Length: 463
Image 1 (cartoon, rainbow, N blue to C red):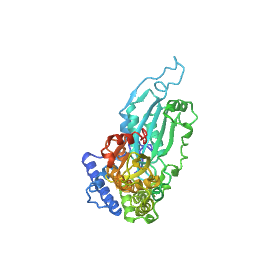
Image 2 (tube, rainbow, N blue to C red; image 1 turned 60 degrees about the horizontal axis):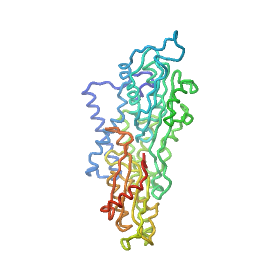
Image 3 (cartoon, rainbow, N blue to C red; image 1 turned 60 degrees about the vertical axis):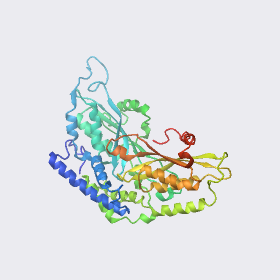
Image 4 (cartoon, rainbow, N blue to C red; image 1 turned 90 degrees about the vertical axis):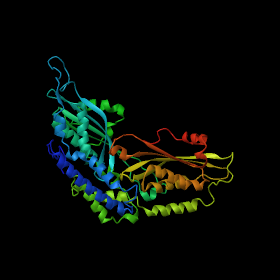
Protein backbone atom coordinates (compact mmCIF):
# COMPACT_ATOMS: atom_id res chain seq x y z
CA UNK A 1 0.00 0.00 0.00
CA UNK A 2 1.27 3.48 -0.79
CA UNK A 3 1.73 6.24 1.77
CA UNK A 4 -0.69 9.15 2.07
CA UNK A 5 0.80 12.35 0.82
CA UNK A 6 3.80 10.85 -0.93
CA UNK A 7 2.19 11.25 -4.35
CA UNK A 8 0.39 14.48 -3.53
CA UNK A 9 -3.01 12.88 -2.95
CA UNK A 10 -4.10 13.80 0.57
CA UNK A 11 -7.34 11.92 0.17
CA UNK A 12 -5.66 8.63 -0.65
CA UNK A 13 -6.77 5.77 1.57
CA UNK A 14 -9.42 3.11 1.90
CA UNK A 15 -13.02 4.22 1.64
CA UNK A 16 -15.77 1.73 2.36
CA UNK A 17 -19.09 1.55 4.12
CA UNK A 18 -19.39 0.27 7.67
CA UNK A 19 -20.33 -3.33 6.80
CA UNK A 20 -17.52 -3.72 4.25
CA UNK A 21 -15.00 -2.21 6.63
CA UNK A 22 -16.14 -4.47 9.48
CA UNK A 23 -15.90 -7.57 7.28
CA UNK A 24 -12.44 -6.69 5.98
CA UNK A 25 -11.22 -5.93 9.50
CA UNK A 26 -12.46 -9.34 10.74
CA UNK A 27 -10.73 -11.11 7.84
CA UNK A 28 -7.45 -9.31 8.49
CA UNK A 29 -7.68 -9.90 12.24
CA UNK A 30 -8.32 -13.61 11.68
CA UNK A 31 -5.30 -13.86 9.35
CA UNK A 32 -3.05 -12.19 11.91
CA UNK A 33 -4.34 -14.48 14.66
CA UNK A 34 -3.45 -17.54 12.59
CA UNK A 35 0.05 -16.15 11.94
CA UNK A 36 0.62 -15.41 15.65
CA UNK A 37 -0.35 -18.99 16.53
CA UNK A 38 2.36 -20.21 14.16
CA UNK A 39 4.91 -17.92 15.87
CA UNK A 40 3.95 -19.04 19.37
CA UNK A 41 4.05 -22.72 18.43
CA UNK A 42 7.50 -22.28 16.87
CA UNK A 43 8.70 -20.75 20.14
CA UNK A 44 7.62 -23.90 21.95
CA UNK A 45 4.61 -22.32 23.64
CA UNK A 46 1.32 -24.06 24.35
CA UNK A 47 -1.21 -21.88 22.52
CA UNK A 48 -3.94 -23.26 24.79
CA UNK A 49 -2.16 -22.19 27.99
CA UNK A 50 -4.29 -19.82 30.06
CA UNK A 51 -1.94 -16.83 29.74
CA UNK A 52 -1.42 -17.42 26.01
CA UNK A 53 -4.75 -18.59 24.67
CA UNK A 54 -6.01 -15.06 23.89
CA UNK A 55 -2.62 -13.69 22.83
CA UNK A 56 -3.24 -14.13 19.07
CA UNK A 57 -6.41 -12.02 19.29
CA UNK A 58 -4.74 -9.38 21.48
CA UNK A 59 -1.77 -9.14 19.11
CA UNK A 60 -4.06 -8.86 16.09
CA UNK A 61 -6.06 -6.06 17.69
CA UNK A 62 -2.92 -4.20 18.79
CA UNK A 63 -1.31 -4.37 15.35
CA UNK A 64 -4.53 -3.40 13.56
CA UNK A 65 -5.00 -0.42 15.87
CA UNK A 66 -1.35 0.55 15.61
CA UNK A 67 -1.43 0.67 11.81
CA UNK A 68 -4.86 2.23 11.27
CA UNK A 69 -3.21 5.20 9.56
CA UNK A 70 -3.16 3.26 6.28
CA UNK A 71 -6.92 3.73 5.95
CA UNK A 72 -7.22 7.31 7.25
CA UNK A 73 -7.58 10.42 5.11
CA UNK A 74 -5.47 13.48 5.83
CA UNK A 75 -7.60 15.53 3.45
CA UNK A 76 -10.74 15.03 5.53
CA UNK A 77 -8.91 16.06 8.71
CA UNK A 78 -7.49 19.27 7.25
CA UNK A 79 -10.36 20.52 5.10
CA UNK A 80 -12.81 20.66 7.98
CA UNK A 81 -10.51 22.70 10.21
CA UNK A 82 -9.25 25.64 8.13
CA UNK A 83 -10.40 28.99 9.48
CA UNK A 84 -10.11 32.53 8.05
CA UNK A 85 -7.89 34.88 10.03
CA UNK A 86 -6.55 38.23 8.85
CA UNK A 87 -2.80 38.70 8.82
CA UNK A 88 -0.66 41.75 9.40
CA UNK A 89 -1.47 44.82 7.33
CA UNK A 90 1.85 45.53 5.68
CA UNK A 91 0.77 49.08 4.91
CA UNK A 92 0.68 49.85 8.66
CA UNK A 93 3.25 47.51 10.17
CA UNK A 94 6.69 46.31 9.24
CA UNK A 95 7.48 42.70 9.90
CA UNK A 96 6.93 39.06 8.97
CA UNK A 97 3.36 38.27 9.83
CA UNK A 98 2.54 35.43 7.46
CA UNK A 99 -1.19 34.80 7.70
CA UNK A 100 -1.65 35.99 11.28
CA UNK A 101 1.45 36.79 13.24
CA UNK A 102 4.42 34.65 12.28
CA UNK A 103 5.27 31.03 12.95
CA UNK A 104 2.75 28.85 14.84
CA UNK A 105 4.29 25.95 16.80
CA UNK A 106 2.73 23.05 18.68
CA UNK A 107 5.30 21.31 20.88
CA UNK A 108 5.65 18.02 22.73
CA UNK A 109 3.08 15.97 20.82
CA UNK A 110 3.66 12.38 21.97
CA UNK A 111 3.14 9.37 19.72
CA UNK A 112 4.30 5.87 19.03
CA UNK A 113 4.81 4.14 15.73
CA UNK A 114 5.94 0.71 14.57
CA UNK A 115 9.50 0.44 13.26
CA UNK A 116 9.42 -0.96 9.74
CA UNK A 117 12.77 -2.71 10.23
CA UNK A 118 11.78 -4.84 13.24
CA UNK A 119 8.00 -4.36 13.78
CA UNK A 120 8.51 -3.19 17.37
CA UNK A 121 7.01 0.09 18.63
CA UNK A 122 9.12 3.21 18.97
CA UNK A 123 8.20 6.37 20.85
CA UNK A 124 8.61 9.91 19.61
CA UNK A 125 7.88 13.52 20.46
CA UNK A 126 6.84 15.75 17.61
CA UNK A 127 7.29 19.52 17.40
CA UNK A 128 5.50 20.95 14.39
CA UNK A 129 5.06 24.51 13.17
CA UNK A 130 3.94 26.46 10.13
CA UNK A 131 3.70 30.03 8.89
CA UNK A 132 0.08 30.76 7.83
CA UNK A 133 -0.68 32.32 4.48
CA UNK A 134 -3.76 33.28 2.44
CA UNK A 135 -5.38 34.47 5.66
CA UNK A 136 -6.23 31.00 6.92
CA UNK A 137 -5.10 28.96 9.90
CA UNK A 138 -5.54 25.33 10.94
CA UNK A 139 -7.22 24.20 14.15
CA UNK A 140 -4.30 23.32 16.42
CA UNK A 141 -5.56 19.85 17.34
CA UNK A 142 -5.41 18.90 13.68
CA UNK A 143 -1.63 19.18 13.66
CA UNK A 144 -1.65 16.31 16.13
CA UNK A 145 -4.25 14.32 14.20
CA UNK A 146 -2.37 14.61 10.91
CA UNK A 147 0.85 13.50 12.59
CA UNK A 148 -0.96 10.53 14.09
CA UNK A 149 -2.16 9.36 10.67
CA UNK A 150 1.43 8.83 9.55
CA UNK A 151 2.59 7.59 12.95
CA UNK A 152 0.08 4.74 12.77
CA UNK A 153 2.00 2.94 10.04
CA UNK A 154 5.22 1.00 9.74
CA UNK A 155 7.74 3.82 9.71
CA UNK A 156 11.28 5.10 10.01
CA UNK A 157 11.92 8.57 11.49
CA UNK A 158 13.02 10.59 8.47
CA UNK A 159 10.24 9.39 6.20
CA UNK A 160 7.74 10.01 9.00
CA UNK A 161 8.93 13.62 9.35
CA UNK A 162 8.86 14.12 5.58
CA UNK A 163 5.34 12.74 5.21
CA UNK A 164 3.92 14.89 8.00
CA UNK A 165 5.61 17.96 6.55
CA UNK A 166 4.42 17.29 2.98
CA UNK A 167 0.84 16.53 4.01
CA UNK A 168 0.52 19.69 6.10
CA UNK A 169 2.08 21.85 3.41
CA UNK A 170 -0.31 20.54 0.78
CA UNK A 171 -3.35 20.67 3.03
CA UNK A 172 -2.84 24.11 4.62
CA UNK A 173 -0.90 25.73 1.77
CA UNK A 174 1.10 27.87 4.20
CA UNK A 175 4.28 29.83 3.64
CA UNK A 176 6.17 26.90 5.12
CA UNK A 177 6.05 23.91 7.49
CA UNK A 178 8.69 22.69 9.97
CA UNK A 179 8.74 19.32 11.74
CA UNK A 180 11.21 18.03 14.35
CA UNK A 181 10.95 14.50 15.78
CA UNK A 182 12.69 13.15 18.89
CA UNK A 183 12.56 9.36 18.44
CA UNK A 184 13.52 6.59 20.87
CA UNK A 185 13.90 2.89 20.11
CA UNK A 186 14.28 0.08 22.63
CA UNK A 187 17.68 -1.65 22.74
CA UNK A 188 18.50 -5.02 21.18
CA UNK A 189 21.12 -6.52 23.51
CA UNK A 190 23.24 -9.48 22.52
CA UNK A 191 21.13 -11.95 24.48
CA UNK A 192 23.83 -14.53 25.05
CA UNK A 193 26.66 -12.34 26.31
CA UNK A 194 24.29 -9.96 28.09
CA UNK A 195 23.30 -12.80 30.41
CA UNK A 196 26.84 -12.88 31.69
CA UNK A 197 26.92 -9.22 32.58
CA UNK A 198 28.15 -7.50 29.42
CA UNK A 199 27.58 -3.79 29.05
CA UNK A 200 23.96 -2.81 28.58
CA UNK A 201 23.08 -0.43 25.79
CA UNK A 202 20.22 1.87 26.61
CA UNK A 203 17.45 3.29 24.50
CA UNK A 204 18.56 4.46 21.05
CA UNK A 205 17.64 8.06 20.29
CA UNK A 206 17.66 10.12 17.12
CA UNK A 207 16.64 13.65 16.07
CA UNK A 208 15.29 14.32 12.57
CA UNK A 209 13.63 17.26 10.90
CA UNK A 210 11.85 18.22 7.72
CA UNK A 211 10.95 21.59 6.23
CA UNK A 212 9.00 23.02 3.32
CA UNK A 213 8.58 26.48 1.83
CA UNK A 214 10.38 29.08 3.93
CA UNK A 215 11.71 26.23 6.11
CA UNK A 216 13.21 24.27 3.23
CA UNK A 217 16.57 26.00 3.74
CA UNK A 218 18.03 24.98 7.12
CA UNK A 219 19.77 28.35 7.36
CA UNK A 220 16.54 30.32 6.97
CA UNK A 221 15.81 32.91 9.65
CA UNK A 222 12.52 31.27 10.62
CA UNK A 223 14.35 28.10 11.66
CA UNK A 224 16.11 30.27 14.25
CA UNK A 225 12.70 31.22 15.65
CA UNK A 226 11.59 27.60 15.61
CA UNK A 227 14.67 26.26 17.40
CA UNK A 228 14.67 29.22 19.75
CA UNK A 229 11.25 28.16 20.99
CA UNK A 230 12.45 24.55 21.32
CA UNK A 231 15.73 25.38 23.01
CA UNK A 232 14.42 24.94 26.54
CA UNK A 233 13.15 21.47 25.52
CA UNK A 234 16.77 20.34 25.46
CA UNK A 235 16.95 20.05 21.69
CA UNK A 236 20.34 20.72 20.14
CA UNK A 237 19.81 21.65 16.50
CA UNK A 238 23.38 20.61 15.69
CA UNK A 239 22.48 17.01 16.55
CA UNK A 240 19.59 16.88 14.09
CA UNK A 241 20.46 14.72 11.11
CA UNK A 242 20.28 16.34 7.72
CA UNK A 243 17.30 15.35 5.61
CA UNK A 244 18.07 12.26 3.57
CA UNK A 245 21.40 11.55 5.29
CA UNK A 246 20.23 9.10 7.94
CA UNK A 247 21.76 5.68 7.79
CA UNK A 248 19.21 3.06 8.88
CA UNK A 249 21.85 1.26 10.89
CA UNK A 250 22.20 4.19 13.26
CA UNK A 251 18.51 4.01 14.05
CA UNK A 252 17.06 0.50 14.39
CA UNK A 253 19.30 -1.73 16.55
CA UNK A 254 17.84 -4.88 14.94
CA UNK A 255 20.03 -4.26 11.90
CA UNK A 256 23.15 -4.97 13.93
CA UNK A 257 21.79 -7.23 16.70
CA UNK A 258 22.96 -10.76 17.32
CA UNK A 259 21.14 -13.93 18.24
CA UNK A 260 22.36 -17.17 19.72
CA UNK A 261 24.27 -19.35 17.27
CA UNK A 262 21.61 -21.99 17.92
CA UNK A 263 19.05 -19.74 16.28
CA UNK A 264 20.86 -18.81 13.06
CA UNK A 265 18.66 -21.17 11.04
CA UNK A 266 15.38 -19.30 10.95
CA UNK A 267 12.13 -21.23 10.85
CA UNK A 268 10.59 -20.79 7.37
CA UNK A 269 7.09 -21.07 8.85
CA UNK A 270 7.84 -18.10 11.13
CA UNK A 271 9.13 -16.02 8.22
CA UNK A 272 6.00 -16.80 6.22
CA UNK A 273 3.81 -15.94 9.21
CA UNK A 274 5.44 -12.52 9.67
CA UNK A 275 5.13 -11.77 5.95
CA UNK A 276 1.44 -12.70 6.21
CA UNK A 277 1.01 -10.24 9.09
CA UNK A 278 2.59 -7.45 7.03
CA UNK A 279 0.24 -8.18 4.14
CA UNK A 280 -2.80 -8.28 6.45
CA UNK A 281 -1.88 -4.83 7.78
CA UNK A 282 -2.00 -3.40 4.25
CA UNK A 283 1.73 -3.41 3.56
CA UNK A 284 3.70 -4.95 0.72
CA UNK A 285 6.20 -7.45 2.20
CA UNK A 286 8.30 -7.13 -0.97
CA UNK A 287 8.78 -3.37 -0.51
CA UNK A 288 12.51 -2.73 -0.35
CA UNK A 289 12.45 -1.41 3.22
CA UNK A 290 10.47 -4.47 4.40
CA UNK A 291 12.36 -7.24 2.65
CA UNK A 292 14.39 -8.11 5.75
CA UNK A 293 11.68 -7.36 8.31
CA UNK A 294 10.29 -10.92 8.65
CA UNK A 295 13.79 -12.25 9.39
CA UNK A 296 14.59 -9.48 11.88
CA UNK A 297 11.30 -9.87 13.76
CA UNK A 298 11.75 -13.65 13.82
CA UNK A 299 15.26 -13.23 15.22
CA UNK A 300 13.86 -10.94 17.88
CA UNK A 301 11.31 -13.55 18.94
CA UNK A 302 13.90 -16.34 18.87
CA UNK A 303 15.93 -14.46 21.46
CA UNK A 304 13.25 -15.52 23.91
CA UNK A 305 13.92 -19.19 23.20
CA UNK A 306 17.60 -19.31 24.04
CA UNK A 307 18.39 -22.57 25.88
CA UNK A 308 22.10 -21.79 26.15
CA UNK A 309 21.22 -19.11 28.70
CA UNK A 310 19.80 -21.75 31.03
CA UNK A 311 22.97 -23.81 30.81
CA UNK A 312 25.09 -20.75 31.50
CA UNK A 313 22.95 -19.79 34.50
CA UNK A 314 23.11 -23.29 35.99
CA UNK A 315 26.87 -23.33 35.52
CA UNK A 316 27.26 -20.02 37.29
CA UNK A 317 24.99 -21.06 40.13
CA UNK A 318 27.04 -24.21 40.64
CA UNK A 319 30.41 -22.45 40.56
CA UNK A 320 29.64 -19.20 42.35
CA UNK A 321 27.51 -20.57 45.18
CA UNK A 322 29.89 -23.29 46.36
CA UNK A 323 30.33 -22.25 50.01
CA UNK A 324 30.68 -18.56 49.18
CA UNK A 325 27.25 -17.23 50.04
CA UNK A 326 25.22 -16.57 53.13
CA UNK A 327 23.04 -19.07 55.01
CA UNK A 328 20.47 -18.81 57.76
CA UNK A 329 23.07 -19.76 60.35
CA UNK A 330 24.78 -16.96 62.23
CA UNK A 331 22.39 -14.16 61.38
CA UNK A 332 22.56 -11.60 64.14
CA UNK A 333 23.36 -8.03 64.99
CA UNK A 334 26.44 -8.00 62.75
CA UNK A 335 24.39 -8.51 59.60
CA UNK A 336 24.46 -5.79 56.97
CA UNK A 337 21.95 -4.84 54.29
CA UNK A 338 23.37 -5.39 50.82
CA UNK A 339 21.72 -3.69 47.84
CA UNK A 340 22.27 -4.22 44.14
CA UNK A 341 20.41 -1.53 42.24
CA UNK A 342 19.55 -0.72 38.63
CA UNK A 343 20.22 -4.10 37.03
CA UNK A 344 18.81 -3.67 33.49
CA UNK A 345 16.47 -6.20 31.97
CA UNK A 346 14.45 -6.75 28.84
CA UNK A 347 11.49 -9.07 28.42
CA UNK A 348 8.55 -9.83 26.15
CA UNK A 349 4.94 -9.55 27.33
CA UNK A 350 3.16 -12.84 26.71
CA UNK A 351 -0.19 -11.09 26.38
CA UNK A 352 0.68 -8.85 23.41
CA UNK A 353 4.13 -10.02 22.21
CA UNK A 354 5.41 -6.52 22.97
CA UNK A 355 8.61 -5.72 24.88
CA UNK A 356 8.83 -4.34 28.37
CA UNK A 357 12.11 -3.21 29.85
CA UNK A 358 13.49 -1.52 32.92
CA UNK A 359 15.61 -2.15 36.00
CA UNK A 360 15.69 -4.58 38.92
CA UNK A 361 16.68 -3.72 42.50
CA UNK A 362 17.71 -6.53 44.87
CA UNK A 363 18.24 -6.37 48.63
CA UNK A 364 19.43 -9.01 51.11
CA UNK A 365 21.40 -9.32 54.33
CA UNK A 366 25.03 -10.42 54.58
CA UNK A 367 26.49 -11.66 57.89
CA UNK A 368 30.06 -11.16 59.03
CA UNK A 369 32.41 -13.58 57.31
CA UNK A 370 30.32 -13.98 54.18
CA UNK A 371 30.73 -12.31 50.81
CA UNK A 372 27.96 -10.57 48.85
CA UNK A 373 26.66 -12.24 45.71
CA UNK A 374 28.59 -11.16 42.65
CA UNK A 375 26.75 -8.57 40.62
CA UNK A 376 27.38 -10.53 37.41
CA UNK A 377 25.54 -13.56 38.86
CA UNK A 378 22.56 -11.44 39.89
CA UNK A 379 22.50 -9.91 36.40
CA UNK A 380 22.52 -13.40 34.91
CA UNK A 381 19.55 -14.44 37.06
CA UNK A 382 17.64 -11.29 36.09
CA UNK A 383 18.38 -11.81 32.43
CA UNK A 384 17.52 -15.52 32.49
CA UNK A 385 13.98 -14.82 33.69
CA UNK A 386 13.62 -11.85 31.37
CA UNK A 387 14.25 -13.70 28.11
CA UNK A 388 10.96 -15.57 28.14
CA UNK A 389 7.40 -14.68 27.32
CA UNK A 390 6.59 -13.10 30.65
CA UNK A 391 4.45 -10.88 32.84
CA UNK A 392 6.14 -8.48 35.25
CA UNK A 393 4.55 -9.92 38.39
CA UNK A 394 5.85 -13.40 37.54
CA UNK A 395 9.38 -12.34 36.65
CA UNK A 396 9.66 -10.43 39.96
CA UNK A 397 8.62 -13.51 41.95
CA UNK A 398 10.89 -15.84 39.96
CA UNK A 399 13.98 -13.69 40.55
CA UNK A 400 13.26 -13.56 44.29
CA UNK A 401 12.63 -17.33 44.48
CA UNK A 402 15.94 -18.09 42.78
CA UNK A 403 18.02 -15.76 44.96
CA UNK A 404 16.29 -16.63 48.25
CA UNK A 405 17.96 -20.02 48.89
CA UNK A 406 21.37 -18.58 48.02
CA UNK A 407 21.33 -16.16 50.94
CA UNK A 408 19.31 -17.91 53.61
CA UNK A 409 15.79 -17.03 52.51
CA UNK A 410 15.66 -13.29 53.14
CA UNK A 411 15.49 -11.23 49.95
CA UNK A 412 13.50 -8.37 48.45
CA UNK A 413 13.18 -7.69 44.72
CA UNK A 414 11.71 -4.58 43.11
CA UNK A 415 11.18 -4.37 39.35
CA UNK A 416 10.49 -1.06 37.60
CA UNK A 417 9.50 -1.33 33.95
CA UNK A 418 8.10 0.53 31.00
CA UNK A 419 5.64 -1.50 28.92
CA UNK A 420 5.28 -0.72 25.24
CA UNK A 421 1.77 -2.15 25.37
CA UNK A 422 0.87 0.84 27.55
CA UNK A 423 1.76 3.28 24.77
CA UNK A 424 0.96 1.26 21.66
CA UNK A 425 -2.60 0.21 22.40
CA UNK A 426 -5.64 1.11 24.48
CA UNK A 427 -5.00 4.08 26.74
CA UNK A 428 -1.71 5.07 25.01
CA UNK A 429 -0.32 6.27 28.33
CA UNK A 430 3.10 7.79 27.71
CA UNK A 431 5.71 7.94 30.45
CA UNK A 432 4.00 5.39 32.68
CA UNK A 433 6.09 3.10 34.83
CA UNK A 434 5.03 -0.13 36.55
CA UNK A 435 6.63 -1.28 39.82
CA UNK A 436 6.30 -4.74 41.37
CA UNK A 437 7.77 -6.18 44.58
CA UNK A 438 8.48 -9.62 46.02
CA UNK A 439 9.67 -9.99 49.64
CA UNK A 440 10.75 -13.24 51.31
CA UNK A 441 11.96 -14.08 54.81
CA UNK A 442 12.57 -11.19 57.14
CA UNK A 443 11.55 -8.66 54.49
CA UNK A 444 8.05 -10.14 54.44
CA UNK A 445 7.42 -9.22 58.10
CA UNK A 446 9.94 -6.53 59.05
CA UNK A 447 8.45 -3.29 57.71
CA UNK A 448 11.43 -1.28 58.98
CA UNK A 449 13.88 -3.44 57.00
CA UNK A 450 11.71 -3.07 53.88
CA UNK A 451 11.64 0.70 54.32
CA UNK A 452 15.42 0.89 54.68
CA UNK A 453 15.90 -0.98 51.40
CA UNK A 454 13.23 0.95 49.51
CA UNK A 455 14.88 4.20 50.60
CA UNK A 456 18.12 3.08 48.93
CA UNK A 457 16.45 3.03 45.52
CA UNK A 458 17.28 6.29 43.69
CA UNK A 459 14.32 8.42 42.72
CA UNK A 460 13.23 8.13 39.09
CA UNK A 461 15.75 5.39 38.39
CA UNK A 462 14.09 4.41 35.16
CA UNK A 463 12.21 6.40 32.56
